Picture 1 (cartoon, one colour):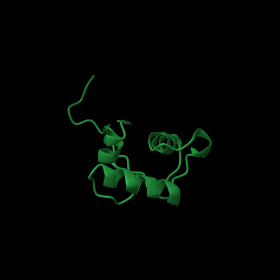
Picture 2 (cartoon, helix red, strand yellow):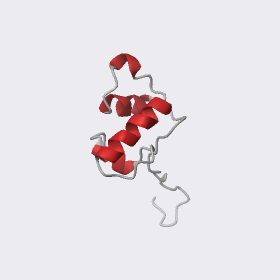
Picture 3 (cartoon, rainbow, N blue to C red):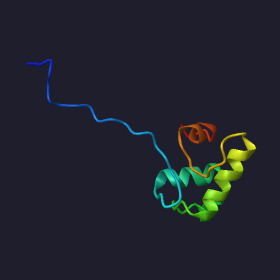
Picture 4 (tube, rainbow, N blue to C red):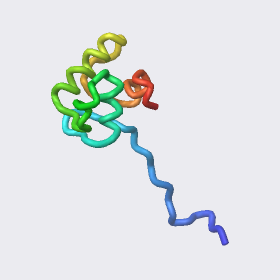
Length: 79
């Protein structure tokens, strides 16, 4: 039986944002897309990753804030 006003709610999908302090496989993908050598793709978003992101954003005429959000992910061909 399906009820119209069910208490089950769909989870909201938050936009993915990566910045200094972020970690994980997605950060590795970002690092690889930015041209990091495999040995330097550690999945930790630190100051070097932030600097590379800013350079990429500036080169692509984006707001160079060093934060990877949906627009930067799209430009990096990750999403």
